[in-house]
Structure formats: structure tokens, C-alpha cells
Image 1 (cartoon, rainbow, N blue to C red):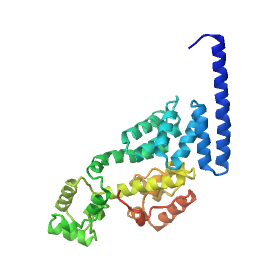
Image 2 (tube, rainbow, N blue to C red; image 1 turned 45 degrees about the vertical axis):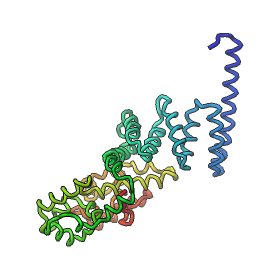
Image 3 (cartoon, rainbow, N blue to C red; image 1 turned 90 degrees about the vertical axis):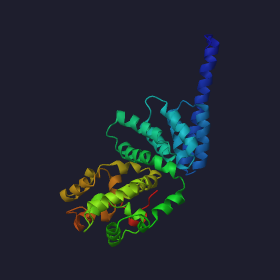
Length: 315
């Protein structure tokens, strides 16, 4: 860099002009946002970033708007630029993790979340989303082997009678009204074993059959819970209220009986709770209609509700 006073003065003036141009476009972008014109806001923010790419707040806002409008690749690029600033903004890391996970970059998503948790171990949203990312990573091998969603759906719709099972196992599944492989995955080992005449040998038989296909009992519930949390998060994201999902269930001030039931189900946040159905809660010992009403009312106060059976979907 030149040490000539004239060159230095010209450089300072140039930087000042760039900052002024960036501020002009930033003001125009925020005015467009206030008027509800998101496309114009994006265009103005792009000009502001071009004039001054060192303003982390402006780069983040552009990334966020692009994120909301489905321009994922450009949003990822901008979030990555924001995260190069030290310290990396937590909101940028969180949003980048979500986009990484959506794109199948599970390792990158987990890295962003770990960066958040290293400085803020109790960050509720990061802890909640880390569960989903790690679960997705565990399923990645299976998904790579079966990328065709129609093929997977056909597999889950396969009648359990098509598999080589003993007469006793078939009879028990029939009496439990378990007709397809997808329905079987929604049951846990404990639920099967609690059924009359369903023994250890039948359980081992079914587990071996599922394991051969890369599946396991209870997987359907886990997938449904994860899909429900993500759907709720996306719904609240546009409203700027997604942080409510990370709030601990202790904030609901539930009765002792209701709290114990949630502990048994390992439900720690409102996002966890909203991903469960009424039937799942009612299946917990001593959790009755009164507790159910209490939980529904508390969730409603936070703008949430329990998952319905119609929302169940294995992805």
C-alpha cells in the first residue's frame, strides 16, 4: 500500500463515499421493507452490500430476506460471509445451520450449532435443532441408498404379511391392527411387548426383519416428531416467533403430574411437546384428561398445539 499522503487521502475519501452510498441503499431497503415490498428491499440491500461488503448487519439482513424468499444458495453464501466476522453472530450461525440441514450438509450444520453451543451451552434453539441434525446424519446412509421417495413410500406401504414372520407374530400384529411396515415403525419395543401373547421371540424376529432393511422400531415416531418440529419452526419463522420452540416446558408451570409425564417422554422444550400427539401423552401412566386439557391450554397460550395424527409422515 502506498505511503503517499495524497494516495492515502484519496483512499479515505473513496471509503467514505462507498459508506455513504451503502447507507443510502440501506435506508431505501428498510423503507421498502416497511412498505412490505420485499423484492425492492432485496435489490436495495444488494446495492448496499456491493458498496460496503464489510457491514455485517446489512449482509445479514440481505441473507435473511433471501432465506425467506427461497434463494437458498445466495443466502448460504451471505450467511457464510457474515460468520467470517469475529465473533460470528449467533443468528447467522443458526440460520446457516438450518439451510445446511435442508441441503443435506449435515456435518456443516452440526459445526455451526457446535460453534453456538461452545459459547452458549444452554442455547435452547441450538440444542433442539442439534437433535434433528444428528438424527438426520444417522439416517444419511439409508437415504443415500434409497433416494427415490416413491420407492421408500412403497416400502413403508408394504403389508407386514409380505415378510417372513412366524404365525404368532403375524397374529399379534393383525390383532393390534398393524397392517403395513410404516405402521409397525410407529410402535416401540415396550408397546409391542405390552400386548397380550406378544413374546420376546416375536420381538427379536421383527427386529431382525427391520434391521435387514435398515429400519428400527420407534423410527416412525422419531421421524414424525422431527418433521413436526421442522414444520412448526418453518411456520413460525416468517412470523419471527420461532424462538418460542426452544423455550423449556418448565415455563408452562404445569402441575406435578403433567410435568412427570413429560419427563418420562424426555420432553424438554415447547418444540418437543408440540411434536407429540394427544394419544402419546395419554399413553403415559397417570396422565389423564385433566392433564391433557392443561397442556393444550398452556400450548395455546404460546401459539402452539399438539401434533395431530393427520400430520404424521415418515420422510
